[in-house]
Image (cartoon, rainbow, N blue to C red; front, top):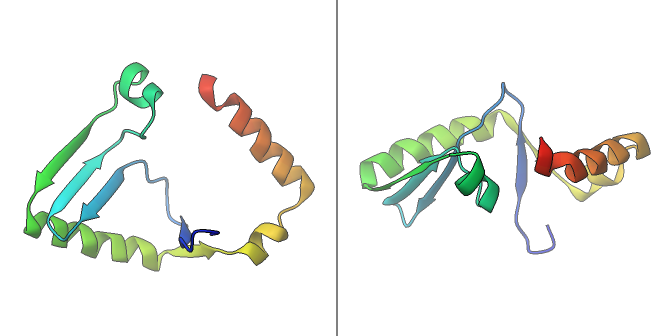
Length: 98
């Protein structure tokens, strides 16, 4: 948020895939996070496409997901309860072994 990036939380069922569209024609889709665990230990993968038509389809799909999402705002974060913040911190600490 400090860098003027807008963050949205998807409100539908779990969504594990990661996707990126760059310059309207380069697409990356997969399950891998950008970290050593995903690439080295979890055997997750991503595919790279150079296709304006695939990029267009993915952009349309992303817009549909965004319609079922809510924006994370500073005001919402400020209202997060102390127990919720503690639970999030504990989950973050345990994430390497989960």
